Length: 257
Length: 65
Image (cartoon, rainbow over all chains, first blue to last red; front, side):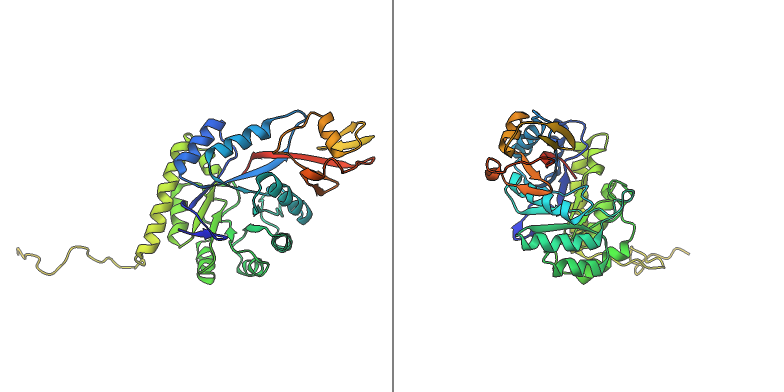
């Protein structure tokens, strides 16, 4: 199983906790997914409010590792302070680093991302950067001290699935020893299986599960697809060819005329 | 003293961040605080003095992707 910053995980599925119809459905989806890492955020608490406490308790009861994010941060300074606040709340140094560069596409600001990653690594964080499939940016993130990369495969929440398979394949080939997690854009289990077949280490999902009619069953479906894709990658797949190749032996076929 | 707390204007008599939290009925070990864009750690809230026009953020764990 893959290791992220020295921690071996028992599932190749990382699950977001947003947009479920209820806390109970979220809890069931986490259980059925088999994940041991969930993403969470930090948001403003209302005066006298206990919403954060109730959610925190729910996550604690699930017994999973927490990967807090800096979702919605559009500047390096915002992302860095959010990461520090998350470290205090969750008492861990993992951070899913998002520095958003565009309101509509939620595309990462890769320049700010590299800068924020460098600062946070210097502060002792284990940074999981939400990035694009750009190899040069990936190099810079590794130079900044990231030991995991999380490329998108399509815009966040779009459910479009992998838009650039050759780029994802190139990323896998260029960084054979870096844990790679596809984060964002997956809509269906077949999308997850497709990126796992490329040799990716894991997939991070949220909307595809939370937005399903039956999120818990969809979580289980994704878990199966991710395992299938990973097993297929290791089993060695055929390359496509132009012509038919008979699967039944030709030798020994009877001749009747 | 005029303060901005989570984006809303307040006029409060709070000398420190800890007093502000108590006045506004914030409690819980899951809260994280920042003043003027800098984190103020839990242990520093009682000694962190507020001044006019400070911008305070009080955050809590929430659902996220």
